[in-house]
Length: 214
Image (tube, rainbow, N blue to C red):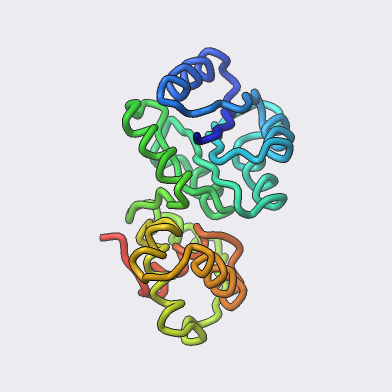
């Protein structure tokens, strides 16, 4: 059962999401009306997936996501936004959010996103990845610049599959290794490349030509 934390300042919207998710066998373990509540709930309950609204009073979704990921780099956050090109989405993804979903998405799209992120995937399409990389460049920010030559062949393949959206389980099956080995290798890859999370790793792989999303 996937455990979900809902974060949105509109109670009616949260109630609708709760009804939908619970009807599909997911468990809503908490609801937060602002970013500060989200940080507290996330620290206390460690949900499998956090659905995080971007625009909220007191503390917005981007800052809340940044704080949650500083506490728990493995947290799986999906941003909820009204607009595909919302620049706040870029900041959240750069911080480590697994991707975003539009508020007007249909139920099937939302459920698929939650299931994919719960399985370890990132919701990065080619346009989003390029936009985030462009945003890094425009702001003169950089992903760590350690060259992937330090990675061996197996590590490079794991990084490529991660960037293409495969979960740890899928990577293990494709490479005929255990999920524990995948996790250990990913930890080593993050250390070698000075990366903090899967989203940054995916962006790094795309930028360096290790993988593409076409």
